[in-house]
Length: 309
Length: 327
Image (cartoon, each protein chain N blue to C red):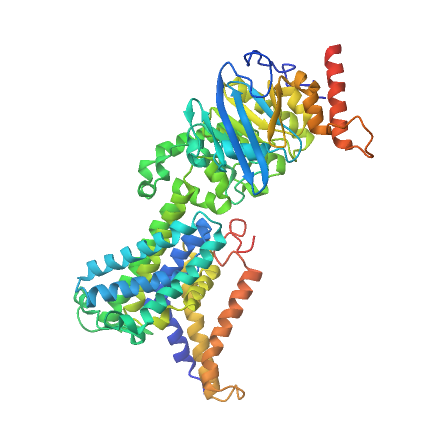
């Protein structure tokens, strides 16, 4: 169950993140990302059409929505991996509209991918070292002369080993990343992202394809990021996880933000139920989408559970 | 009867021949492109042609000294790399393959056309550019060596210079690939989006890789023309494929692989062509004319490439885990 959290019980939720009533595009007390009028069209299809969105700093924000809602597209736009047809957005007060992905990453906004991108034929340790920012040995002119970067490399290696130990991958450090299991690759990708000392970590479906045994450890790692002062934005389908760790939830459907709020309130929002089940969900249209119904039912059970405790 | 001793001695000569050195250096450039960065460059022949023609034209037409001619060839290949890279390196790898194979052919045809005959020598090519290089030769006149390796002072000078360049290039490549720069490059080979997400300017790294490998190709072109003349028909697409064969034979993501591959390739090629030619003369292959026999060795090269890719995709020196040609 989701309530069986880490060693110290249920995670501490951040509250008081927003100003005024929670609604799509609500103002935040201290936003780290502010996006305005972002529109991305693929031919005739409008994949993302967000009027205003603020992501609160120092909290864990979940981006949820049914398949095809535009979550990953919005992710790609915010990280510079895709360019919108129109719109502006800022990160930490600086405009990053149209800034290429690698520059966005250098500013401290690092992301992972839905389909894990472990660099398979590099060792686990090399994967980690690659994550460190501003390495002088990465310049061609200095690369040939190791004395320019040897010290720095040692410091990076020490930091990488430390992180690997935290993620329990230290025994694998000399193996090729290709030999890791799917869940370990997710861990490696997250650890590698941390090597760049980010302020905002964006995780695209961190739980997809992770076996239940690893789920708890991944959850704890995400909660730890917040503890260390980082902001987390993640896309997720696993409602238990969203409810368990998210401080704030943004719901997207058909490219638009349809609801925002704290996880408990937002699940009860009629717009969210519409988004997942369709607005005619109370009429009998034949076989309902059992997966979604189960998810919503489980959430209701969760709520009942938690109110009992 | 077949003169086996002559056959073996001819094959042994290929071990240190300048042509072997040229192919090794070109393959090393390709190792940087293909083996380490994952760039599918099918235009290495074009880079070699630029080195060869750049050196010869700079010497004959512009009257530059040796160092100036070498520099001219290098600059030409850098410009060529930039022209190829700027539009294609943002796209997927396959596009670079198409563009490079076409661009190398365009170059060869430009060198062949009659329009520029006074400069390029058209189909006859260029010669008479070796004077400056000969003057630099510190070796006194005479013949030296032992066994099958007996050459005059010029031939030794070409071999020492050529293999010297190969060793320097190999050392540079080895250092680069052990550095954080090499780590980024290998990361790009695996997944460039992941590397981009970590704040590396992938486009810039790919361009650097294309330029370095191209310069190695250009230097290889210069070594290649020292023992012969510059002839445009030497720079056909098949040259690129021979270099790929060498690279895959030795191991694509290795530094020594291209060198070992080149030596093995040339020794075997020389042995087979010598053997087949003599076997036809001796009447061992009655169904074959001597012209057909001359082509047979290339069929053998084709078969060799297939066998390598199927049974030993990582090459002789490659680590099977690190780079298999077919993933």
